[in-house]
Length: 215
Image 1 (cartoon, rainbow, N blue to C red):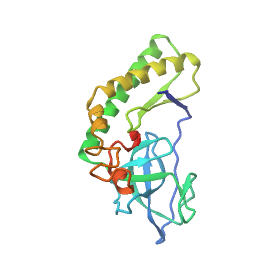
Image 2 (cartoon, rainbow, N blue to C red):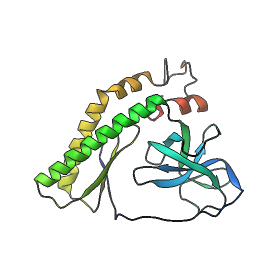
Image 3 (tube, helix red, strand yellow):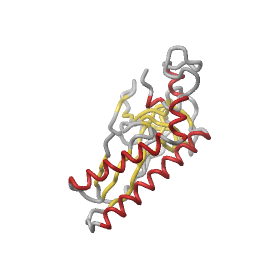
C-alpha cells in the first residue's frame, strides 16, 4: 500500500444552484472527503435518499463516506466523471446508508488518521522541515490514507509517509475492522453461496466490505 500525497492552496469555493423542478431520477448531490467535494452520485437500487443521510459511496478514489445534500437537477453545473444513460456527469455511486456498525468503524478509522497526523507533524517539527501538513484523510476501505500538504513535498517526506501508512495498515488489521473484513456481509461472503446474494447488484451493495471482495 502506498501513501497518497496531495498538495494544494487553501481556498473557499462558493456557488449558487438555480432552483428547478427537473430532478434526475436516482441521482443525488453528495459531499465527500475532508475537503467537502460535491458531485452527482447515482443510487444503485434507486432507494429514496433524504438530505443529511450518510452513505457508503463508490468514488474515483475508492470506498468513502458521504453526506447526501439533495436530489440532483438538470440545471446544476456539469461535473466530470462517469455518465449515466442520460449522459449526465457522475462522480460515483451511492452503495447503501451508513449503519451503526459503519459509524463505529468510520470513527475508528478517523482516530487512526488523527494518530497518523500527529505522528507526521511531530516528525516534521523535530527535523524542522518547512512542509505544512493540512490533513490526513483515511478512506472507508481501511487501507488508504491521503496526506494533504500545503505545498509539494520532497522524497524524504515520501519515505516517512510510507512508514506511517504501513503502521496504519497494521493497526487496522489487528482491530475490529479485521473481524469485519473476515465476516463481510454474512456467511460465505464473496462466494456464490453467500446468503445475501453476494455478486448480485443488491447483495454487493449491502456488503460492508465490498471494496475488499476478491470474488
